[in-house]
Amino acid sequence: MSKLSIVRLFLTRSSSIWSRNIRVWSKLAGPSLMGNFGEPLLYLLVLGYGLGQFVGEVKGLSYMAFLASGVICTSAVNSASFEGMYSAYTRMDVQQTWLGMLSTPVGVAEVVFGEVLWAATKSLISVSAILIVSIGLGLVGDAWAVFILPVAFLTGLCFSSLALLVTSYARSYDFFLYYTTLFITPMVLLSGVFFPIASLPEFVQYLVKVLPLYHAISLVRPLMTGGELSFVFLHIAVLLVFGVSAAMLATYRIKKRLIK
Amino acid sequence: MGLKVPYGFGLECLSGILACLQIARTFLLGAVIMSVVNIKYYLRMSVKKSQEPIVKAVRLSKNYSGKTVVNQLNLTIDAGCFCGILGPNGAGKTTTLRMFIGHCPIDEGSLSILGLTMPKDASLIRESVGVVPQMDNLDPDFTVEENLYVYGRFFGIANHVLKQRIVELLDFASLQDKADSKISELSGGMRRRLTLARALINKPKLLILDEPTTGLDPQARQSIWQKLRELKKQGLTLILTTHYMEEAERLCDRVIVMDHGEVKADSPPKQLIQTEIESHVLEVHAAGEGLIEKIKQDSAIARFEKSGDIYFFYGHKLLHALGVLEQSEHDDYLFRPANLEDVFIKLTGRDLRE
Image 1 (cartoon, rainbow over the protein chains, first blue to last red):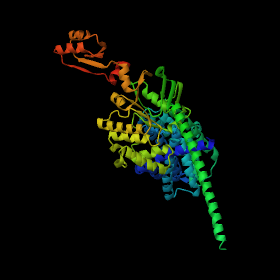
Image 2 (image 1 turned 135 degrees about the horizontal axis):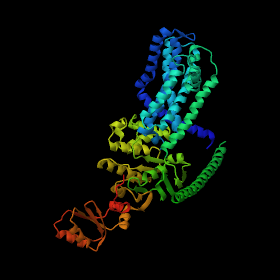
Image 3 (image 1 turned 90 degrees about the horizontal axis):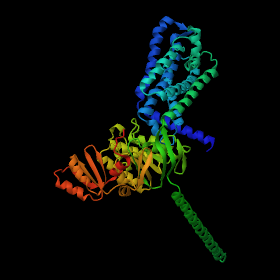
Image 4 (image 1 turned 60 degrees about the vertical axis):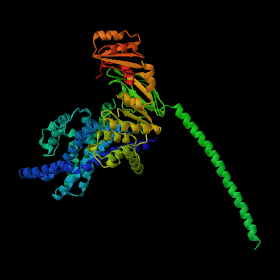
């Protein structure tokens, strides 16, 4: 088989996993959309309005406009992470869906890639919804905001890969609390969602700059508010490096776990 | 003018006949060539069929943290065979089957399925293998029909082919009326039939079933048996594990008894009973020591076992023992022909496996 046809087969099989998941989602789209979309929207409106009165402007933006790009990124992170942890664990362990898939020609790497693609799609869906509302609220600067969508997808890829890596170690749903409490929540609080990281002590700033969420926000905020983009390739590279290495590790780990 | 017509006509006729002959010759030649090619093709196929077993395991071994689960297993399964694997829990049956589909890395030995090498060609092998797992993993979010469709897509089967096959398989599994039902609305038997139908979506050459009827009521079990017999008739090769001796006896034309990762016996079920064990069993329940001692006097008793308060005496004609029992007041006993379960117990012992 030529290299090209191997790649094509890989993508076809991964997309069959993706379309299986989207088929499930389409049946439960109502509650799922509300979860992905309602919560970030509440944060945006309530914090944006309430805190905005005290804060006034941040870096020349209304607080709500500043917050919107952070909330968009957080929503991408949460959608992908939830899918990569709770939903993926259900398919891996509780329902044994993956084992069923692996009884067909599909392999572990294809399952993992299909799941990552799907989780990133969920990020895309929820970000699109919030973006539309943001336009309605007048929080979007110009048409460059369209490029937020591929960034949201990339952020989804990165965080779903990380989540799948966590899932590969999980023995129950409770395990995920470690990851959310010790990693996701501190990262969201510190990465410039609610306030600019410049207000943090210098060493914390360095720490934050290593984490992928900061780089997602660094891309989304200028795109959203019409600001100037800088270090685009660096930001993309950080998200990619985290995503690809986590996905590869997750594949290795899940293979060890299922094919034993 | 008038002359030219018949002349031309004659020539045309001639050339027409010639052309016809030409065509006929080509056809004839073609047919001859084709049939020769066909015969050769079939010969090669049949030769290949008889030469290449569906499963060939050579000194296959598997260890889990120092414990040998499959021990130097040699196994050849030919095309069209309905092969049953029996064994107590932990005998290595499921591990063996998992190796067959590449769900378990091989520690030692070699394994070829359908002429392809495991694990190198795992994905390719699974294209032609159907799997009915021990634990149901149907998709609870989907309807019956969607379960078949989505699973078929994992094989990359084209939409229109899949639609046709789903109709056939729903028919085969007697689930036509349930196409749009949710999985939670199905009975245990229906679920198993759907899992069986799902395993056939890729038109497999080999069907692997891990305890397909465990937990089913007798009616549901019989209906699965009937489907499996149908598949066997169609020439499919089947491998099944089971804890039900009756199932193996009725379905399989070859029974393999496994224990501690090794093959303890391997032959057709009837032959297994004939060769591995005495023809009859006398079960004596809750009898006094005195009576048992008297029964033991029968020289026709080849061997006996005690399990709880039941004595099992094995032999061909236990006339003396039966006479002793008839004269005594004890009437809680059973004299019966030996069956596969007796063979199983003889080969794997009476100890509980948990």
